[in-house]
Length: 353
Image (tube, rainbow, N blue to C red):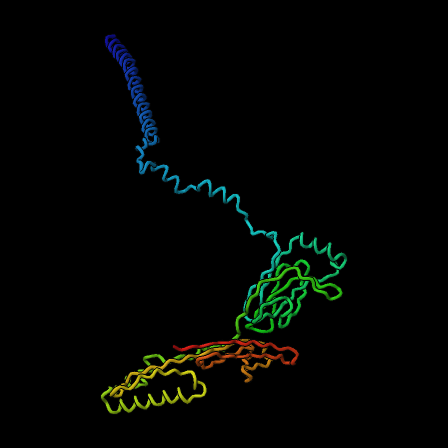
């Protein structure tokens, strides 16, 4: 019996001990939960702090303008520029509202032309021509106006090109290079009459080869004259060879001036009177006249009654000695068929003092 009592008392003690240990476990679990909540709260607080933007530093100013304002200005467009861009047209206008015809040389044989005729001009022509306006052909008339002042009637020649009624530009092929051209835009009526609407500017097409123009030959340069006179060959004035060479050049120079038909009266030697010994100083002055002009390539030209040979384009140039006095140089040109002629007379005077 005593043994049973001891067993019962032991069992009771064990049961009572278990009951006392349960609240302790619950207390431990509740404190751990609190710690977990605190950790989560701290983590959330740290994340929120990391997401917050740092406080901006105070802006610096330069010449009264803040750095932020300067930065914005680098990528901004002024209002005046934006408004101008909005007001500018995206394409060039098709017309400008004024009558005009313009030509440009493209190469020796081609000309580019463009024009604009206002509706008011067409209305005027329509009222003037009546039914003939609708029967007329739009034509480009190309005039050769080389070396003349064009007055609508004195062109060397012309030819017509019929263009479409809606055409506003045209490439024109000319048969000759190195000529001057003028173009009329007009209407060719059924009876052949040509009505001019617009007249272009005058242009000259380039040559299709080397120019025949060469530089004129003028007086001999001083360096070349010195070499010819013996200075450039190592002959001093005291050298017998040098003296002989100089005397020879001097004789040929003065003999050429005094005996040449073209310069017989053009030289004006200035003589120094001989006083005692022979002096070596000398000087000569000459004057020349250049006469040049142009006409039809197949025309006949005379100057002072002497025939002149023309270049292929009808130009010519002559050189004359110009002595003291008055020189009359009548220039006469006659057309190839002999029906027309022109005479121009330059009068030139010279006086040497």
